[in-house]
Image 1 (cartoon, rainbow, N blue to C red):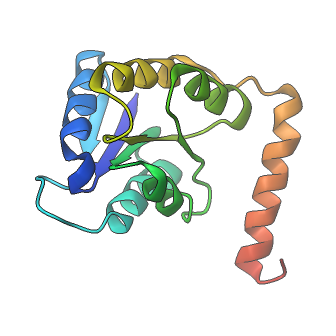
Image 2: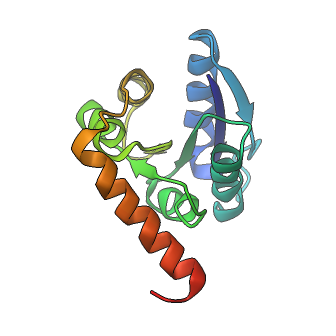
Length: 152
């Protein structure tokens, strides 16, 4: 799988760990920055990852920050992105099963390294269930369409 990863300075160390973990699992990882713990604003990095997922060439993405909250919000501004902030394996599995989340958001200050890698594994090992969830995703897409058209 092709996975785009991005972070701000507060998520840099965890992003590096996650990227290496994904590479070791056989995934192709594209690191979109940042490349140090020097302070940067997260929105451009998270939007870049989301765009790579929505428009290609990435299949999925991971964004990391201090809490992961702003990173998910920024990624979700990209039409078609479904970034899920996950704090445990259960939320990671449900984000994939029920919401077909295509980006995982993590907070370096919120989850430890071992838990973060377990969340990553759960997220990428879980498939979308489809079924009753498909109409709900269509409703989300309809909201995006309405907002883009200015009719919402």
